[in-house]
Image (cartoon, rainbow over all chains, first blue to last red):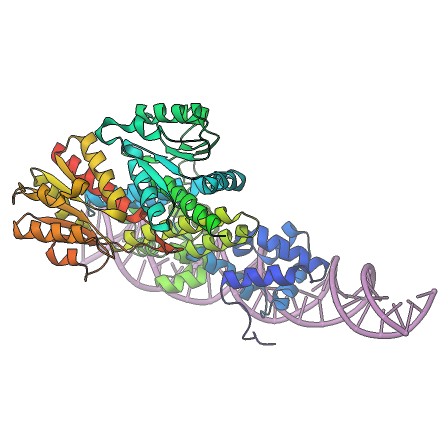
Length: 276
Length: 276
DNA sequence: GCAAAAATGGAATAAACATTCTAATCATAA
DNA sequence: TTATGATTAGAATGTTTATTCCATTTTTGC
């Protein structure tokens, strides 16, 4: 038997094939399929004997499994698992070490960029794992139902609030950006009603105007959706729904990437909800 | 001989040891040291015979090299190279595949978030591979030498320019944020001189005010540093130094993550340069 | 330039290896 | 229940493996 043309040549395709065919395979082979998906690294580095022991099957079953997937033998299948590891990305420590090594040749500014990239990537990944779909859905529903959305975010959060205002403008969603211009910020909420909503963004040290405005909104029974950094935030206290975003920092400057991704999500989700 | 206590147990330490001792080793062993640093993946996956052939040495030399590093034999050294690959991070495709898998169960809003995360991650990675240290250094030098830095960025780029203004404020760097308020934007550059600098940010479709201001700055011989999206951008034409940032987009909304990381880099780098 | 020591090449070897083969077991349908 | 085909366990096999050993070459110190 030669390797058929349809036999996966990369890990993604092989994984899909194992998932697809895994359930229909005989007992032992399906047992191996499950093990392979759970312990790909062990397949990459192990020997037929060692893997067979770990997966509680006979060595010969591993060869039969490989052949069932279309390969000539186990070694050919293993090569796919190894290739997957070859083009993986260095982990955090390794990258830092590489940077330090290059530090002499690379410019200082470039190192800064790597640092800020790293902080952004980390923050986004972090939020991705914590963000709950239920909270997101509630917030979107609230904002989509609002007549006017008041956007509050000053100082470090102003890039976020100004982006949301820009996006809402493009999407035709009625909104008011509270920018504190002319020191008249507190006037902007005068006409807000419980049928509106407030989207507030603030992080330590919370801008006092933002806190005041959010408190004021809560007193007027205007629903508040907040993006902030901890359960102890004054925004969390007054908000109906709030998101915790922990931005990584580098050189004392916190990333904004995760907050921005969340803000974009909310604006587009609201627009889509309104559209349907 | 048993493995000594000082024998490296992780790749970083082993690498350091190879670098340190590599030069002082005899010819063949130093040859292996160089090969190991250059082709760590081949060490991880290869056999003694196959590696020996690639490195142009005898198999026995590999065992001697391993022992010189403090291990009992080659297999023990190889385990370190394998461990390095085990805790590496999934690459881009793999992460996306994982997201897609989760996507089925998640809410629509959550899918949006994954999309925007993806766009951000990709944009940052992309810029990271393209960004040239030389350009960065030139830009930093220009900005650090400026008496006043004029920051231009409207509409979609306004979050960026407002962030830079915020950061410059915190860092005590004299700047003017041109925000187009009251339609007086063009007045703001009246007093700019060649000893100042302009930091302009704009992407397709380029805001007309931004283009006008940059042209005006160039005419006044004020050095312009631009962040834009292509060589055909009207900003690139007038800028002394410019950065090409290709932001990925999702659902028609382009990311800002890479631009933001670059902006943060520039601000902090300028502050550090001024400080020294 | 010569003796001693270190390093190397390459064959020898035993253990480990992937794979094959066959008898036993299991599932399935008449 | 029984016959049939699929599946499995486990021993057998020939190859590849890491490692050792020793003769040869190269380097070192005087």
